[in-house]
Structure formats: C-alpha cells, structure tokens
Image 1 (tube, rainbow, N blue to C red):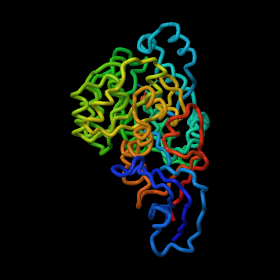
Image 2 (image 1 turned 30 degrees about the horizontal axis):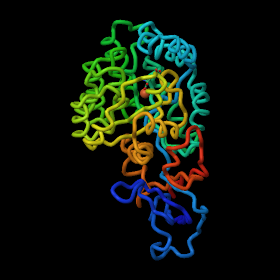
Image 3 (image 1 turned 60 degrees about the vertical axis):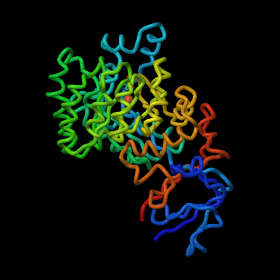
Image 4 (image 1 turned 135 degrees about the horizontal axis):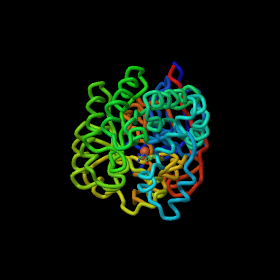
Length: 402
Ligand code: NIG
Ligand code: FE
C-alpha cells in the first residue's frame, strides 16, 4: 500500500471543536492508500512510519482542498448586456419578467452541443482548481427541456473525467419557466421538470435535486411536487430559497431533510429553526449578493445561534454571480456577511462537504478522509480570507486511491 508523509507543515485541519482552525503548528500528515492516516505535531508521528517517503513543505500552510458546493458552471453565453441594464436601473426581477435573465442563458445553452458546453466550462473549472478546489457541485437548469437538461448533466459528468476533480451534479429542472410554458408553470413541472428528473435518475446523472423557489420561478407547492418525486427516487434535495423574498422555501426544503438551502437573504426565524432541526446546511452566496447589489443580509447571527452549519460557495453563473474565485467568496463572506475568517474557511471546506453529503469523505484533515489538500504560501489561515483577488496557492494535492 502506498504510503507517504507530508512534512514541515502548519496544518489547519478545520476539525471542529479544538484549537481555532484545528491548527497544528509544526505538523506532518501521513497518507496511506489515498487516505489520511494521521495528522499530528511532527514529534508525535505514530510508530511504524520511519523511513517512509517524505516530502517537506518548508513550513507552508496546509488546509483541506477547497469545496465549491454551489455552482452553475455549465452554461452558454454571458449576460454582460444584462449587467449594463441593471446598472442603468433595471432590477434582476424586472429583467426576468421581461423574458431576459435565466431564460436568455437558456437560449444560449440550448444552442450549444454537449462538447461545446464542456469546452466553455473548462476554463472556469481550471480557475477554481487553480485555487485549490478539488470538489465542485454543478447544476443543470439552463436547458429546461428534458434533452437539454440531460445534455447539461452529461457535460458536468464529463468534467470529472477531464480534470482531477470530484463533480457532484444537481438536477435543477425547476429553475425557471421557459418561454414555451409562459404562464403555465404547473404544466412545465408535469411535462418537463418531473419527466426530466426521472430520465436523469434513470441515467444516474443526478446526485441531488435542486429548485428555485421564488416569485419569478416556482411556488413552494410546485417545488414540493418535484421533491416528492426526488424522494421516491431516493435522491437528496436542496433549494435556492429566500434569495429575493420569503416564500418559506427553506422550511419546505427542511421538511424533506434537505442537504442545504442556499442564498437565504430573506430567511426568517421559522426557516432558521426548521433548518436547524433538519440538519440542513445554509449555503451563503456572497457573489450573488454583491453582484445583484442586494441589501438584505442572510441572518448569520440567527443561523449561528441555532447551530446551523454555514457553507460559502461561488454560485458561479452568468447572471447573478459571474465568479470563479472561491477565495473571493470567502473574503466577501467576511466583509459582506460578517462571518469570521475561520467560519468562512470552514464554509468552503468542512461545511461545504456537509452540504454535498460528503462530510465523511472530505472537508477536514481527519484520519480516514481522502488525502486532498491545498498547500498555501501563507503563514496564518486568516490570510486566505483577508486578501482580495490574490491566489497564494502553492500546490493542490489530490491523492488517488490505490
Ligand atoms: O443561484 N437564483 C437562481 N439561480 C441562479 C441565478 C441564475 C441566473 O441568473 O442565471 C443563482 O443566483
Ligand atoms: Fe444558484
């Protein structure tokens, strides 16, 4: 079995409950068969490891490899013109109601082949990987026909074969009502969203099921019908909830034991309590908050007080968050949402892993988990949240299993 030691590291294990950041000051990590065997102060190395191949990292900082748990990485076109319109005064909702917004990305995505979608997503993926990301979630939701939703999910799956990254897919058929179903959202749910979910399930293309519960998208009742089918197929759910208004989406998602509810700017106390009870993760998306110039902040203090795990993600998408830097999202989570740097870094590692149902596998430097690390040219982990638009990654390490 392949063994190695990574030595001369400061290690932010992100293990909860111990020192801040789970910090081990002068540490080393033992790797065996692609998993973490131990992480300890260098003078506390376990017996039986002397003579094992050792690489020294000159005192650099190790963290778990980063996890981007909410992206729309696969899409066609861009929405720079819409950005101009919004700066001239049009709101995101007005543009959506006038047939722009998500629906304009739908036309651009339908026009691309699966190959072209993969090609256009790769540079964005490479930017994330270049910042130490080893796991990303990718949603469908810009196809909105059964065939185009499946095309997006197949493209997302292919990314995993083309780059050393773990991809978790979410089926987001209930993202927007396409023009051909204008004012017939219920028919869209019955004729496209649910059949698409069944087809994605049959092909093993969806690891989870997402939706957009909002005035410009779908009602809680419509989302519930999609979630009922997800449940019947044994797929976990998550939801874009309370981004622009409070429709009780997070509460609905929690009633299905959701992995996460995401955005949450307009989340009320009842939603916080429901999420805490269900163990759902709150995924905060400061890029979308910033880019839409939102002013309502997610209720971070209430989430914290209720013990709801808080994750941070890019929400990389062409309309509300054209962002391919998870470190920038971490920075913004601190400046805009007042997370501590430790919470924000945990949000892009430990809690993000939890939001993908991968909490036992990745997200902390803990014995038994996958040997997936980011090594940084920084001294203290707070530096990862502190710098704006900087990338101090020294090396990303993703050990294959034997
Ligand atoms: O997460 N909120 C809905 N979906 C995306 C935005 C998609 C778009 O505008 O293209 C989001 O912000
Ligand atoms: Fe999103």
